[in-house]
Amino acid sequence: MKAKVYVTIKQNVLDPQGQAVQGSLHTMGFAEVDKVRIGKYLELELDTNDRAEAEARVKVMCEKLLANTVVEDYRFELEG
Amino acid sequence: MKAKVYVTIKQNVLDPQGQAVQGSLHTMGFAEVDKVRIGKYLELELDTNDRAEAEARVKVMCEKLLANTVVEDYRFELEG
Image (tube, rainbow over the protein chains, first blue to last red):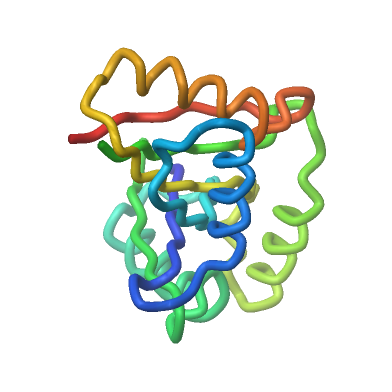
């Protein structure tokens, strides 16, 4: 089974990396870019076929390691 | 219009960050995690309503700045 995890910075938290990329895009002539937010995208391969258990365990992985829930949100999808 | 961009490390390229996360997950007791690959997830807000033009321009942004196409793949979706 595969888990696709998206970790994003919370709406009210500053994203200096995103601002830097936006600035670079403007410099390069992409004036239409109003805002850039940068997060993480993780793919996990899981050796299990129990979807319910996988869902519960990936949630714990996100809470404990993959996301910093003080400043980040996460969501994930299971495939296969 | 919003663009969601996914930048992933190519299949044959080593991902030391992913390996480190996998090692940490194993240490934490998540033995079912066979493989971890870490990429980037970007959200761009674009001040345009021309979908075809947005698609062409986001492609150029990816090729020129957002992804290093030597070692990374990218894909994106447009919304709105």
